[in-house]
Image: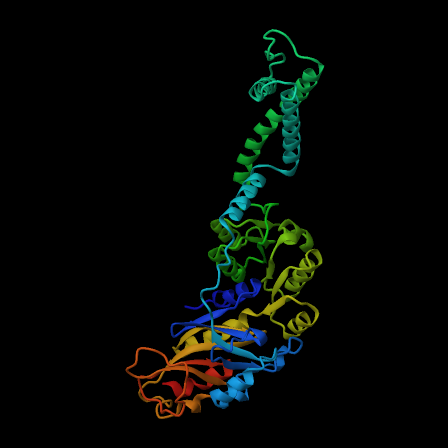
Length: 442
């Protein structure tokens, strides 16, 4: 059982966080590094050449250099040109991307504050509380002890017109104290009904609102535009990483609403204009926007509106059309484009072969499949030299676990060794390259 959205979700999440997407193979995490990010302390595999953001279709995946020796490839990679991409091991000791516990506590408190009160009630409540605090401070400064000032203020709020005054049990204070007590009484008249209204409104909100609303205190969150199948998967991945998320979904009956409620994710619902929905989702303080509806035009509109509101926000757009993707890469920096079908198709093709697919890695919109292949009895692979499977532009052997061995050899020094039944290969392949193995594997 495979899900296209589940297969593609990690690529969207890592693109939004500007984190390397990795695939675990042979006990190691593999990722695609480009240019200056290539670590020459390792022995990386050149996996793509001729990389150009303005011409993503021209990228050479598994280029001709794959047929050369590892020494020649390593020498070529030493220049670490931005046009090169290499497959190498990921340092799994890098720091967590989860926000601090204090940040999450602040976000929770702001969410609760907005959930129980509307904007009008918050304005009235804050004004009444400020007047009350100013009056308490004023009485305190009239040489009354702080505790006595609080005592007099609370009695006034409760409706006692002339409480006992410090030092004069049956008297009334001076003009200044009378002014403050009048202010306290008026604040109390407003404050008590507002407190009651907060509880009443909160009870009604719990009955009518299906999801929480975004908090004004949100910072560093990710906005997901569209809670369809892909949006749900991406949202769940962010929640697993501890990254705060806000969803936007126009259809209040979409199944993504129920998923968001189950994950306790705030959602902006309703048929709002795109810019208004993004503002409600606090895109001005967001770290990234991921537009994953099934409509390329809607996703592109969301990306443009998000950039208009917050020019520094990271944008990841789901686009099927290559022309759209080309224009996005040409016009916008800090932007990534992904296609669910491009990312998922290799995994589905391999699954139909009955082979174990470990995952997919992408270079812009080009996709590389990472898979394990067993050399079985009767397979055309048995009897071939390992180097014969290195086909430029199609397939590349990354590691081999020889028959009877318990570990993978990633150095590939003996690429002339003949494959025998029982060998297991870790391979990188394009979709066409992996399809070409169908008749040769078993």
